[in-house]
Length: 407
Image (cartoon, rainbow, N blue to C red):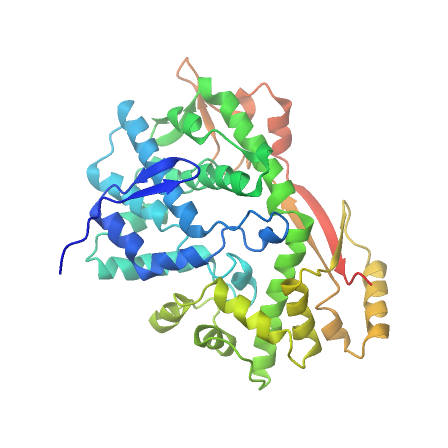
């Protein structure tokens, strides 16, 4: 068989041409585990709010790898020693950091795959691939898990300014059309350096960091925590919970084999074994969409109405408050629904519920963004910045909401 050309180039709408750095990266991208990310939405059901937000986890992972290459080049130019093995491990880790995401990114974590985060599933996939690729991902897994003895390498994968955030803010801003969320990722990366084995940002990049934090706050309120998006994701989570509940009661719901498996199998904190991981690898957005298109005609009132709401974008009403929702308001809406339909209170609670959301653009007590001053002193961004906003961004803002039918 003729050997394939592994020096491929992607044409990305954000960064232009992206080259694949080595043959292992090519093989990982070609692997069916990674190709599945083409069928996983980067922003869940946010396209119900922002019609252009149809980009995928595949786009994002390739973009992160591109930015990681830029970061490695910048740090090496500044005299930071990064071995060839460490370089390749960084590319592998950032490429695969989201490989464990399920359909619509987060919905399954809170419904039919309980207490198993996408980070855990990503680790399972990386370990499986490591076995398949003869141990070539061992160092990447160590960096991904934060176990490697050089912390700055781990911080490039996961921190308050990592290549993950540097890509998704810019990419999500582009595809949603929310210009206020756009950041200059390349400028930020050129300002990176390392002191005492930790990532720092040179002082002349402080305004870019300020813009990054403000943009992140804006994107969370305007996009990731948009009230319509919250309703849609809550409905999707409830669809999957109801489907699993009915299946456990003996109902036979039409669904793909991978989805059937997770409806009938209890996956909890014990994690995924090889068989369930293999089945998970065959599950993507299309399984859920196809199921909902069928389930909207089910006899079960709850499942059919929840599916119909999502398919036809006829969602619940949502009200945001600065204070916890009063019990009286919740009971009032439950009573209205129970008077209108012959359903139980437990079934009504699928349509009437309360919860909260929080936004903290900068966590000053967790993996801080450190500024390297010209004097050589390293200080936290909240102290180095002359913007009062940065201190304000360090405070978590909590909002409460109630959802209920429109009529």
